[in-house]
Length: 88
Image (cartoon, rainbow, N blue to C red; front, side, top):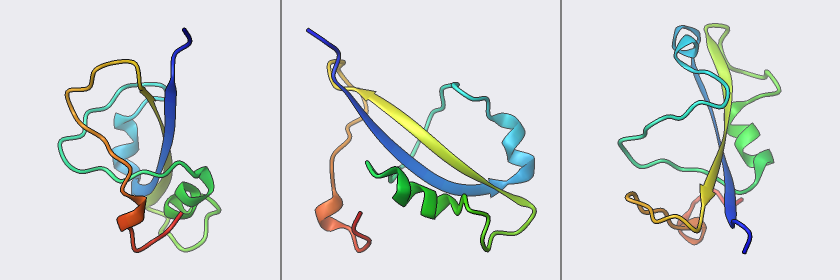
C-alpha cells in the first residue's frame, strides 16, 4: 500500500536574524501548540509573502509540513477548523 501523507502549511514572519537558523528541507521541533492549514493560499496570507505590510527587519516564511499518516505519532494532531474564528 502507498504512504498516506497529509500536507499542511503555516505562514508567519520571523526576525531576519532568526532566518540563519533555518535550512530548506530541515527538521524542526515545536514544543507548543502549532496552527497550520491545508490551504497554501491561507498560509501565504499569514506569511504575507506578497510583501505587503511587514517590516524590512522581518522575513516571510512558509512552512510545508508533511505528516505521514501511517506512522505512529508521539505528538497528536487534529483538525480544529470547525473551532476557528478564521475559516480556511
